[in-house]
Image (cartoon, rainbow, N blue to C red):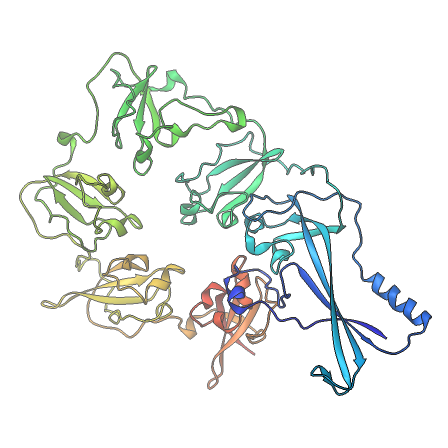
Length: 580
């Protein structure tokens, strides 16, 4: 007599769906509104026996959510800072549509002698939710009762009422290496595997930075350990801590080197550079190499200063200065660079100009010789605003790209890379580089570029590992940005066949082929393997594995992330070849 059925409400617009961030488990259905559940109830107009009606009402009551005696936590706020285990509350609204069929004889809404009448009622209840993915819990797209909320939040019990007492967050196990390391500071250039501490509600957590080169992200905004959107991709939690790591005081005075006379005291208005020395309370401090030297003149990095106490102690000066010894009396200033201490590099290279420079390329300005730094800083060497030793609005910007290596006199030939060196040869030359899609070249592919036509001289470059390999088909090794995808391999002579990867015979063998990749499958998980047919005659298949989180969500995104498609590498990793 009474049927309770799910309506076929339309899903959210496709553009809304596409704007949502990638998920490990993409929902397959969406509701009419993020926090509404729409139900339809159809009732035919005929007599219902009382006992049947009672049974129907009993069935409806059994579908109602359970009610929890717990109070409601503070309401969820998009953009607020949340950590794993934090509790919030959110109102979930249920919309029920009752459809009644009545007999009729006329009217535009009378169809086949029946008229449909719909009555809509709404019911709102409040539930508690626990944060399970701190990186997403603050994101507006992950509203606890929204389309993607289940990927970041977990519902705790049934309906809540009143106000909950503050939740007690359990303290994780200690990390086992004594007290707390230095507090995390955004913008710091963290070394591979560096450890930091982050103060949370009720305890302090220790995190370890990723290995090289991922450590380059550890100090960037959005990658903060603990509760940022991408923090879990470069930081690993090690456990909780208390106190500080011993010792945290300055080096033992008697173990320091005797620096003789004391250099000048720290001057907040001075422009300190790498190697500059100052004195404070009988200790000598030296400005660290770039990029740490950029902080030596900044407020807050004065030698010997600190903020906070105990686990909250922050000593930013250690990031910019090193204690190198003790002193007595005075000496002459040591402001760098000292011209007479620079090496004589002989003839002067070319003047700087806007062009593509690579690591080690040299230019000269006013008798000084500058060398282009390694990648990624080399990308700035040829850009306007990074000209060495120029007084402009970006006077110090050149220090990000260039290093002073000596002084010169006279002139010599250009030093722009690449240089042809027969002694460093890879043998016969591969094919010349040509542009194409980002999948044209893969890790290890070799290409040749011509340095000179008469006499003919060529050099070889090797495509870097993924994800940098994506640049290999888009940027020539010789253009600006080409060093993002290509590494210099050496000179070459003659020609060889193509080296385009993958070479089917060189793939690892996987016994037995898994199921074929299917664009309509939506439950692929990290580590799942699929087979992909590359030729029917002869029959050849290769095996791909679904990547770990956060890339896992792409495995279920259909043909746009097909293993061999443009964005396939974001979801799938090549494993080998298979038979059977």
